[in-house]
Length: 397
Ligand SMILES: NC(=O)c1ccc[n+]([C@@H]2O[C@H](COP(=O)([O-])OP(=O)(O)OC[C@H]3O[C@@H](n4cnc5c(N)ncnc54)[C@H](O)[C@@H]3O)[C@@H](O)[C@H]2O)c1
Image 1 (cartoon, rainbow, N blue to C red):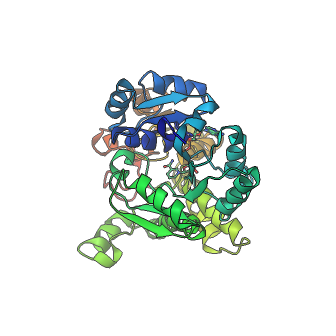
Image 2 (cartoon, helix red, strand yellow):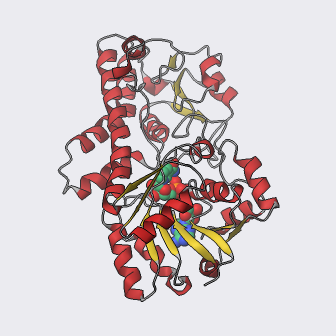
């Protein structure tokens, strides 16, 4: 059967595909990152990260220099690897509907390069039933390969730590495929969790919905406290101090990014839209920028003011602006305020951003849009709206 590569990661230059490909390569496997984005492939192959990820530049340099990792847009590379890991994006559409065909279609496009004896690992977050659909499609091709679903659970910004620490959920329908998936992920960690494919699909969606709902609760409690003239973060600190039962009550803040909302919506669709808590959480989380502007407009005549937003990424110390609520805040303010100035030291893909000093110098009021650590100590002489409680400045909205 003879494969000269151990692993090919399909979507291997993306936010989760690339760290995974690098992690396998750094553990000594021979890995290819296959991706349809030629610009990202070119960057990776030249040893440069296409996005920020702590610890990644050094590791990428190492695995490219040793040729343990190669990046390519050439699909025939897929036929050379014993393990094919598919981790392409699985966004919901503009009406928040999941696309259960995204992963099966990507696999079908690779049909000419699938070979008997390969292990196909689905790692994208998928709509429940997608693994079974892929199994059926693969069977109809008449190629004998094993299929498994092993969801990715890392958080961006912690990828290269968590890939070597988090237990890996592995699932497959038959013992051979399960054993092969377990062996592959034991290259990264000792602890694996075995589930049925449908259990694993739901486990991943439950994980993200749980987080999204927790953030919604925190945000609703924030609004409640704020409306009552009290500082949510002060109350939260009081609640969690040496009290393990509430230790995971989150701080308030924009709950956004490419995963949490869309996976909560996938779960809602899966349950025939009978997931009352999911859309309710969306109303709260997506409503937070509207709430902030509404509160501000009761105190200020925004139409005469320039508002600054510091931080446009969807999370702290990240350059990723996908589905960031800081951009929703910007849109609302462009409608209501005299002017809006935005800065983010990490974001490189937005030509509208201005330097931080310009925001600080020319704004009448500053809103923290992303909880970058540098904003904790940053000297800001203008009024600051800090929903995250980052600066412990108390009630300001
Ligand atoms: N971003 C996260 O923190 C995170 C965490 C856990 C799980 N996930 C899940 O992982 C999956 C990927 O997310 P991401 O954030 O890495 O997305 P991404 O957009 O950063 O990466 C996906 C990559 O796949 C490539 N691609 C798309 N279609 C392809 C195809 N047919 N063949 C080859 N390459 C293709 C894209 O060019 C891109 O580089 C999603 O299902 C997501 O829900 C993401």
